[in-house]
Image (cartoon, rainbow, N blue to C red; front, side):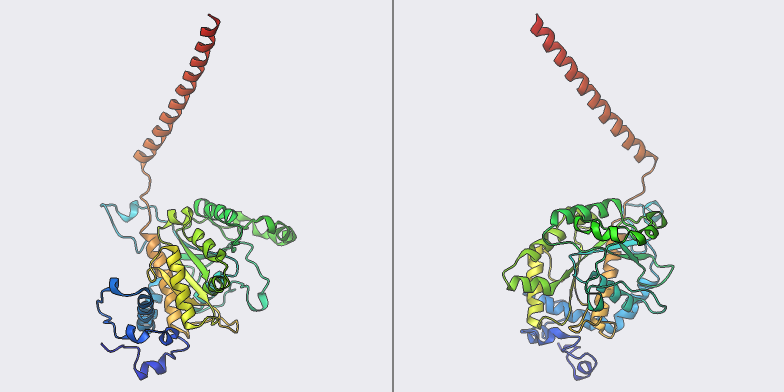
Length: 380
């Protein structure tokens, strides 16, 4: 079957080395001969599955981007919920705004990814983009939670939170903070307190007065995106350092994220710092280490070029990948809502706690009586 993206016309529209970089990979010709209808995916090698997934994104990038962008613009919280068990939507505990949290290690590209979302999804108006650790802001560090409405609309049904990056050698502290975000929720300008950052926060006391948490809404995290700088992980592995890979696996497989959604979305960010073969090899190694599919819920996003410039929607494949990642996050969120607690649920909850308290009380009294009985027996 002829590959729809291999014709000369399409090559003029998609420069292979810029937007369809994977076409220079080994065995790409074998991938282009695969029936794009319903091939037996189980018989494909991991490399071919990745190449086929990248071709899928390129195939629908042009027409699919506008359609997906429109779905996100008209999205309201709970639109993707599927009725199950006869439960009506009104009976579901659906928050007014879906919250997508970006988590990852320092300089992994979270703020750059937020800027890319603004570029791809936001169409009009001027907004302050998230600061990044590249370019003139090389020493910038995200010290506070930042809420972003990447659609630049007051009617948006979701928001994206940019968080402070974790450290590879302090995973215990990172997982503890992540757990607090997932359990207690997050709010705009919430400080990310780390042991080494107290001095910086103290120096920033003047501006902290205007960051009162009472001014902002506490939001429950509905879905998490794990952002990984794939170039950093690959170069560390080449140098014999497996710490970034091990730390990424520990973060991705943490109970805090798994309790939110079983398979968090994995976003691989990089500039033009790796060759085609290195990009594919790094993706395969990372997915193998995390124990996940090479294609399901994994998005390869070029956030920054080798010159430090932000990639924008002039790259249709990257633009569509970003939009689909957000769309997938909303699907996961809406299908993970729980029913509201009614009077019967609260009554059972209170009764269970009451019975537990009575059990503990009687056990305590029994222990006291046993102790007194033993003392009386010893006297006799």
